[in-house]
Image (tube, rainbow, N blue to C red; front, side, top):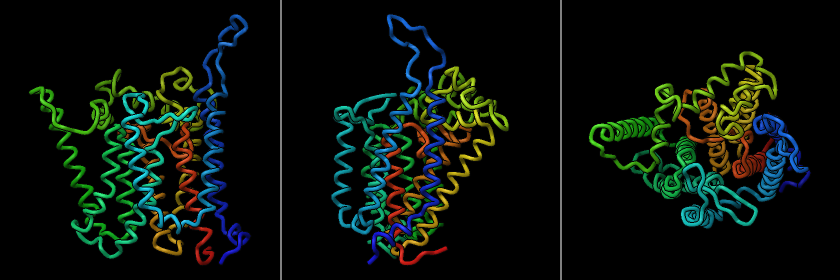
Length: 393
């Protein structure tokens, strides 16, 4: 039995320092992305220039709540989570179902719930819940993941909450669920050839189905059923040639590419981005925050941020490999899959090489639900690392 002091010695301080650096870096960029672009006069004794630090203060609250969640995840023995997965799974479905009936709508989707002064996005918390539940599910199915038939229960397990999320609709989180599922199946021992075949087959089917949808719509006015909004479908393909609709669906990608391109090697200078402060760059504090880094700090600043994420994911993989049991390994693999997919898709989206799916940059984009979820997930990883059987250098 480990004493508290021995456990604290096994905290991965490299991971903690990396996370802290990413968060501090993000606060500077959020300030730049949200500060007023011009100073308006004082009218009737009221300052109309706006509060330059309003978003930073709100994000600081999110960060504090996130570290509280991390502390709670450290305090609870991760092995005890396996005992409550049925309850967590049902609560997750109730929470996602509540969004459809009581949720608030914004930007064409119904994803948020408001309780008093608090507004949160259940689908963000759902990512971590499904990692915990799926880890226990896979742990109970060791050695039974060798065929397509063996994987059907896994697809059903993930598919039920996924349908709730598609109904909102939330394409980004749906894709994250898929990444988590395939990443954890690979870690659990499913045959790589089988997983690759399923991915390629599913991707091919999706492309053909979406292509048929648009062709039939253009020629016959007939639509195939797809559980996504029309604008989400267009975003899935517009990145191939955003200039074909430069003032519509391609606008986001084009402005992001211009911002990153203008940054050059060392950027235009912090707080000096013309795309950022000219309000050309859309939702620049959330989905397109990497574009702000590219414009204002250039290639050098972008590489520095990507290096921080590389260190973070490397330490997460290290913890997964050295977990003392299979459940801990699968938990860590789920978190690694989630974080890696978020970083790759968000950066690829801003660079115009991946579709715009609304996936935030972990611990960097503005937002409370995502921050709390990610820090709680990292708290579980630190928990796994603290309780491994021996320290591995």
